[in-house]
Image (cartoon, rainbow, N blue to C red; front, side):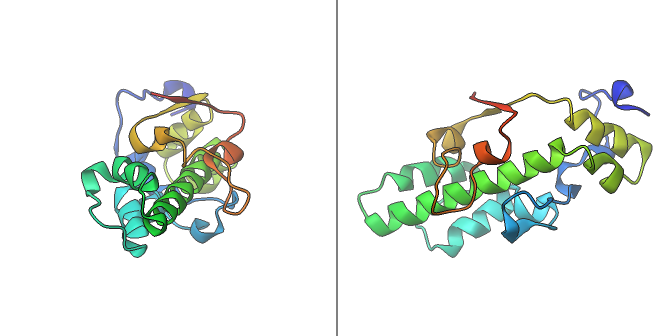
Amino acid sequence: MSAADFNPLELTMDASLGQVVIGDFGCGEITGMRADEAVLRDAFCALATADCLPGLRPYRLLDDLASAAAATDARVARAASAALVSVGCRLGALIATLRDPRTPDDQADTPARHAYLSYGLTVNSVSLAGGLAAGAAATPSPARAPSLLDLAPDLWIGHG
């Protein structure tokens, strides 16, 4: 199966995003981790709750972090902003890994997985919504890790 044969509307287990191993793209805390451990919702929940932020709902986590980043309590606002920046860094590292031409050959163990990862090289846009679109995850911060925009500069990232 080639990338040309891959149909994103007919996904199989070989198209699992959680199995992608994050490359070394400026977010060292997750380099070498699987995406399901570093970038999916449960990983974001663990990241946010590590800062003891109150009232975060797993099903609205990024929206709640965006609201908390605007809180009048400076500690809460700083912690939520830092969590959003980390989320942006982690997503940027995942996107950069998916856009790395070495990823299909390095990470595919089946022809279908290779086709899925090769298809990822053709994606030219990503739409963000909810808490991610609030800005902190996509905004560069010189004092913190690179942002999503720093790690995927050739990708059009729109608010959707």
